[in-house]
Length: 174
Image 1 (cartoon, rainbow, N blue to C red):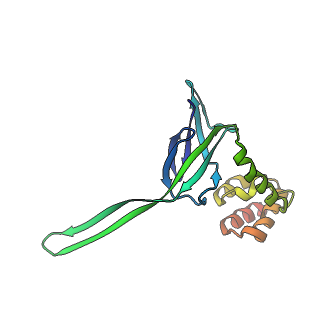
Image 2: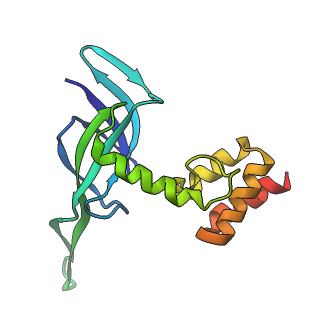
Image 3: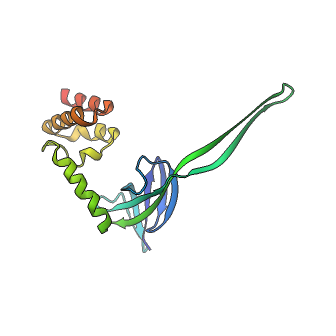
């Protein structure tokens, strides 16, 4: 049976197809699918570290709260007592597929993404709209001047993310 090790929210999880697990709250809405970072694929006595072509497809099933944690503070002989509580915000995800195979249910969102990027400038790096500010800052050094200019134009017109604008303007100045 194949498995994968994925990274979500700074934590690593060993997952199998069809498995459900609770993770820290994700920005993805309920019912939507996403592709977490794959650190390793394994199964049948073989494994592959940092696979480039394979991806894991996960679907957000719900957004429950974790168990309540009670916190009490007490100082003897002074009458000081405080009680607070905490409930972690979680997301329940279901692993739909592991590996390079894609299901028909994930094909529809890809078409929507292609339509969204159709209005973007032609020189924009592939998958730019899905990149985070950190990924933009890391990858911008390898882009051509045309791609940096197109990304800068895209940020000013659409997203207006300050961190991405700063990283792109720094690359444009070089």
